[in-house]
Length: 96
Image (cartoon, rainbow, N blue to C red; front, side):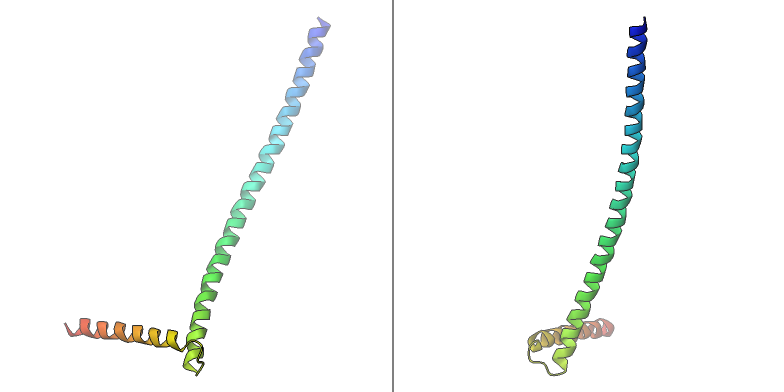
């Protein structure tokens, strides 16, 4: 009978150790999930900042062209023509 009691004690100890490991893994899993969420927020913030900087860059390119730079003159002319078409369209809509 003592052999069975030893086997039961051993099983209980192993099950207890498994539960402890399971709790540790669950805690690690939760921490990793939180880290993923934080990283996703950082990535979104950085993506928004990149888009903002791209828009600022384009604006600076156009402003530089208007100040006399020959590098982006064609882009500036196209942008001005586009704006003129939009204004003409708005005037036409207001006239109707």
